[in-house]
Amino acid sequence: MKRVSSASVPPRVNSPLRLRRGFLTLLLYRPPHHEGTCSVKRLYAWLPASVDTRVRVLAWASLVVQIILIGTGGAVRLTGSGLGCPTWPQCTEGSFVSTPEMGVHGIIEFTNRLLTFVVVLVSIAVFVAVLRIRKERRDLFVLTLLQGLSIPLQAVIGGITVLTGLNPYIVGLHFVVSIGLVVVTTMLVYRVYTGRRGAAVGLTLAVPAWYLAVSRLAAVFVGLAVALGILTTGSGPHAGDAATPRNGLNTDVMEHLHSYPAYVLFALTLLLVVVALVRGLPRRWVVTLLVIELAQIAVGLTQSRLGLPPALVVLHMVLAASLVAAMTATLLAERRPAPAGASRPTRTSASASASA
Image 1 (spheres, rainbow, N blue to C red):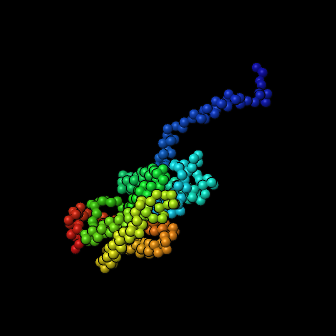
Image 2: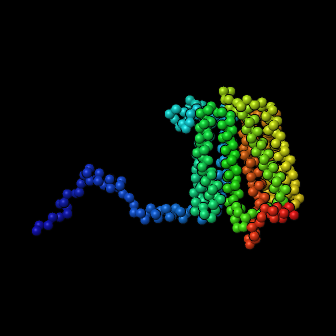
């Protein structure tokens, strides 16, 4: 038989049909099941197996972005940019971003909306970070889940705010939800450092029972001050531009009503700080609370006398969010885990031992 040299064999031509078949094979290829399983296992193994630096950093990031978002939201309102993006979820008809024709108000409102995506990313990241420890630290899992569920809620309220032409009560509800998220994320930060609530045999009072009662009363006045502050803003010049509806309340009267719970809160906090210093009670957060209140009072009085300059009003809002965070941490610090091996204390025995 005559042998044919390889040099005489014509090269193999990749016909269009052959190339099409190869492309379809690549497109329809599915990796073996074990390859996908291994990837998921590797990803799951990378997640924190305990509360480490990654979890703590993400917890702090959750709190910080919530407070920053309150500040940028205030800037939107104070610059009259609430309708800088006149539609929702788009910024303007046919565009999700601001256009040059929309001017600076469109840029401010779009920037505030853009920051929401940062909040989304942080919320997802901290939720994923605690997935592996969700059974051991159910408290962290629930707190991060609440933070995540708030995102669509805030988006809907924000959309209703725009579609109702910045109704002052809807805007106020938007702010209330944001303050609630500051409480949730403060609890998250506190728990990643102090451990699970109710771990081991439960919690005991770290302060006298009457001291806890005064702290709770102070928290009530924090809520009153925030609520009256919302109504005051909704009645005044910084509810939005000239076309933005107001709530119809007298601004001068509301300013005085807003200041009364703030002064009562200051007196209660001063009492708590003095007692904490004299009796050696937990004082880090209550002192922080007092410092924020002093700054808040100074800013409030200054802005009132200077005709409510927008920069000071934004600072006042950021301090209000910080005040809520400090109040939350103060209440959390007044209870501590019971010593290992101790029996679960009853409310009566805990109160009696704390007041001794």
